[in-house]
Image (cartoon, rainbow, N blue to C red; front, side, top):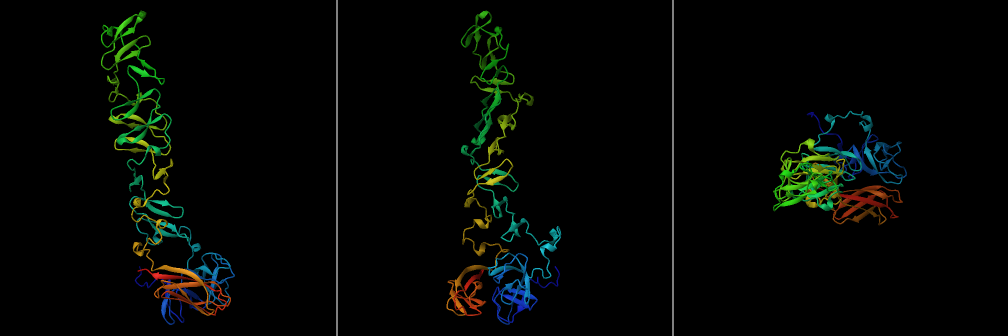
Length: 495
């Protein structure tokens, strides 16, 4: 920064030739420059006068303002007539013909660069004011001016509320880490909250006792427990199972020479020539299986074994990818208990795959948020409770009236004054002065105001002053008809 810089020049130290109240128009230089008093300035005193900025000013009734219109000061109020008046700037917002106040962009265009003067893509990042690390530019307020939005909160996301965008923490049934990892809270998803269950799937208790969808529709497969989980597998080895429930023992699996005398645990079986023959059925873990001609007792072997309790065990590493049945569209192979691959249905609309420390499951994001199959996460209405809100994550729409004091405001946005009282009154007393009781007002406060209803007697607001519990207005002429309506706003310094 240049060492010879004095100040920005937006506010002048002006020695007045009259008494001005804060908000009054001031002809800094006759017929050339108009400013707005920022404080009350006594006659002959030095006070701050703004020469740029947008201000609400007293507008002459009878002429409408359009955005960008040239506005002039006639010594009392702001008009659209150039003759014998001092140019003051541009209309910032449109104002109706009957309005007595309008928004003026003070001295806009007087040697200044307007938006239309700046070429496209001419404002580089190097020309922008400093933006705090972790902040973004966001359109704020009714003027749509860009404002810094703090977005650096750990694990917070930007969410629109229909009017604004705010940085909030993902909470409720899920949390979000600053790595982007979404974590669903333990036991947050109940059966009542689950999405539709795909045809042919069952709800199965998974690791950590969490319910999950189990694809059970694969043709001719059965559900079998493996000591940890339940899986859908094909019956294989010496027997196969059709989807009608028909169990088929492999042809020629049991030979007649294998039969002993009919002893305990043996069965009679019809053999060739329809002669009954002893069939030993007591061998531990053997099963009886038909071969299309006869029935035999055999051990389940090869890629699977069976215990005498009926439990079938597929041999470790026995099932290769080439042996697997068709994998349904939208299903994935997942390592199940004992590190065996199994089909997991992952096609359910808007469900995600989540590990539970033991297994991976396809579950719906539910509770306080939902997720669409586009990846869009939606927080449910009324889902965020006070205890779920991270510090400094609440925007203005969520703060109760009278809940924020100055100590809660960031130093960068702490105002010098705040509105303490505001209102209006109808003139009484028929004179040039009227004192209105404003309980609580202090002599140290600042008051600004305007004439809302112009009096029948031609007059303008000469001054507006505040003392303890009173706001006093003075008109340029006595309002004998008592029809003037005065509005006021009392500001108090932030301590």
